[in-house]
Amino acid sequence: MRPLIGVTTSELRPSNQATTRRHGEPAHPEMALGMTYLRTLDAAGAIPVVLPPTGTDHLAALLDRLDGICLSGGPDLDPAAYGASDRHTQLGPTEPSLDAFELSLAREALTRRLPILAICRGSQALNVACGGTLHQHIDGHRQIEMATQTTHEVEIDSGSRLHRITRSRKLAVNSFHHQAVDRVGDGLQIVGHATDGTIEAIEGPGFTVGVQWHAETLYAHLPLFEALVRAAARTELRVAA
View 1 (cartoon, rainbow, N blue to C red):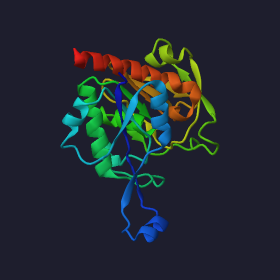
View 2 (view 1 turned 45 degrees about the horizontal axis):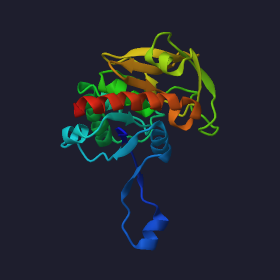
View 3 (view 1 turned 135 degrees about the vertical axis):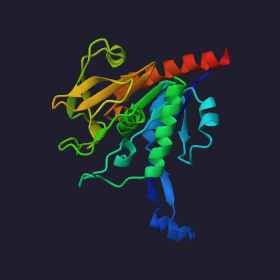
View 4 (view 1 turned 60 degrees about the horizontal axis):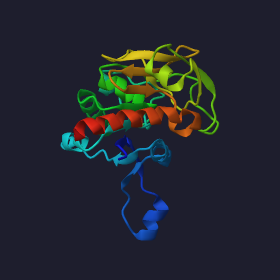
């Protein structure tokens, strides 16, 4: 049976005004999640399940039904989530209530040793959930080209889980972020850097992998998702037993 992988969506957008006028509905926020995550997880052998950020009251019951987690990309994390009082002038819009849901989800998933693959903002959220901090702005990491194109290389530490999955010490990646890991959270370790020193990959206990690039849009990086699915399938077997 295909494992169930929960995919977070931490972005809210205003409803399309043309749609509002056509249907006569009032404007309201809508969830936004790229279909690429879902298609890639499906291609990797999972059944993806979108997790709406509706609060933390039912997290335990939700995670009881899941075999793994994918923390997706999205907007900037609010600096208050990691105890920073200053806000960089380049900081984008933040949604503290959505941060709270995602951070609680990540912490509970870590406690349960559920497999986690964290992408871009998701990798930053994973780090913050473990007590780490972020650089609020790094110049030169926003990509102009298409998401399916790569722009720079990441050096991967030999012997890391990411190295074993990709079978490479250097990966060509894309880059759509302007925030990145600063102080690494408890239980996590750095396993990948960009050439300018920016932390691009982190790992934790069990299958816990965070990458700063958008691997879901790069076909060559499908093995990351396949590894998540294999780890989630083992979780499913343990629960069934």
